[in-house]
Length: 145
Image 1 (tube, rainbow, N blue to C red):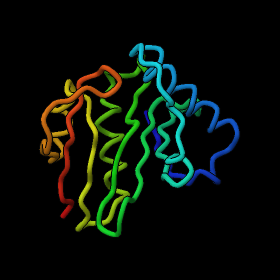
Image 2: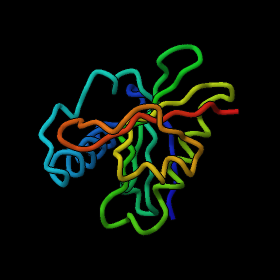
Image 3: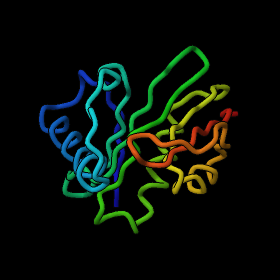
């Protein structure tokens, strides 16, 4: 069982902030062996989607942020390694997308290996594959109706 919450940065508790960064660093920096500036200024203005299990442990996370009146970006989509077979990634993205108004263009900078996953939500590739921090990525987007 997973329950989702959406919070602005100022609404996050110290504990939520700690576990959010701990989860993101454990996957994006340590697991993927990719040293980069994982914490960035976008966190201050983004809406944070927290997925917690019944015990209140953070097991899934993503952020969404508006880049213009009609354009949003989703990113930092993550599920704790031990929970990845439970379909939480799909539920997480569905919840995150439900928080964005219809009529908006939604963009994602997806890891290439997840292209089919994002396509299942309606995202289409809009770039060639490129390396970002030595990991193949592809830009994808779709218009939410």
